[in-house]
Image: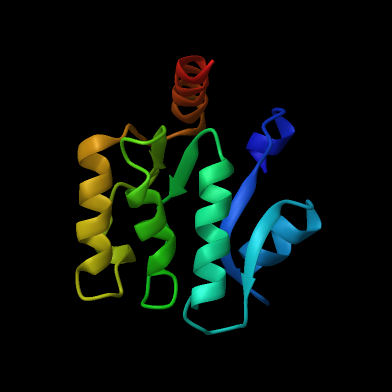
Length: 137
């Protein structure tokens, strides 16, 4: 990942075995929460997700396709708003096409955008990360 290459310690949310994001994170030895393919996030995965989020200095939420199986990743990020810096990396700026939850994901994304910086490119992400990490020191 670009963040890991830049020296940031990176962890990931819940990723499903067999998905490209899981394979990429695992190959880079990034801490992640694994779930079986095509499954919803269960209680054990959710607890581990919240533990990783709690340990993070900054939460970076990346706009991705969201279905019922991975909506808990966004819920977790939203739950940390106001408790620690949350950044929303949204290069495409079109959330509706990513929402496969009948609007639940869009509502969560909207709540996050209302309270967290939204960035559309990697330079903006690095600027916000530097700002957020500076606030934490």
